[in-house]
Image (tube, rainbow, N blue to C red; front, side):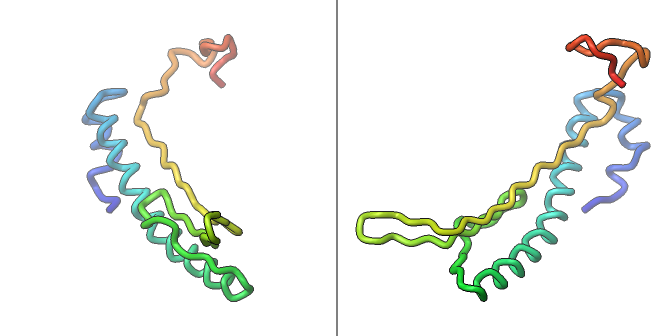
Length: 116
């Protein structure tokens, strides 16, 4: 759940680009992923129902987990595996707190370009 643990003041109290801020940012990413999973999984189930209503036979391929939901219309025929339609959603949540800093807007990045 997104709550006061992730307030700006909490991040600031941990220090800029600190290991503690990184841990809190990682925890935030996990919480965001769980919240997104609830919405995405429900919507994907609706989409699968609609696709199956028009002729597909999609079913969950693996147990869904936050960030990874997949369905396949597949079967084994004799000694052959056949997969018709595959539908998967992979979600990546990226977080960080004050890990990107510059002393001047004219500083150069590693590739020689300005960081703007």
